[in-house]
Length: 209
Image 1 (cartoon, rainbow, N blue to C red):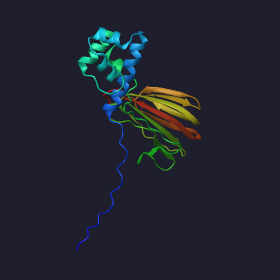
Image 2 (image 1 turned 180 degrees about the vertical axis):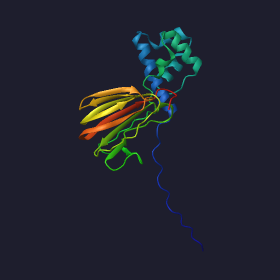
Image 3 (image 1 turned 90 degrees about the vertical axis):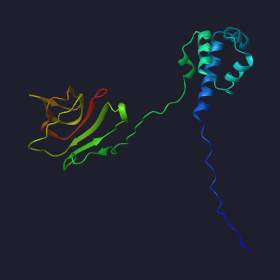
């Protein structure tokens, strides 16, 4: 006699609410709010839209998802934009948290005595800003010059340095800020008091990288 032994299957994870469920809940809440704000009963809304009280009750209780044509009729009757029915619907959003000292090290830009830490970068068309923490701990005879699209903003945190933009040189001390066109050759020229640390924010704008 052959006995088959089957390994127990792991329990399925609890079902996550579907997008359809979320839409139904938000529509139900917003429809009820829009109706009560006007002081209308379900019967009054039914008269104004030509819909049955039963159908309106199902929508307000999240038991059904109205069609686009139904939403248009409701919006017209309630004198509200269709988008009002979707207020509160959660959307996926890029959120980046970088704990102190955990910025992404940029190599080979980060070298002995020079540290460049990228503090965040969002995805796709939302990548329009690049914040970076720069720490300079050793003097260098010649610093590299940078050029890039968009605008750059510097905020001095500690130390003192002379920073060049194009043909001009600026003395930067703690609390100072500097904003300039990224297309102009720029970079540190002389470190006066170390360590020098500053926040650099590059703003590219849409479609320019």
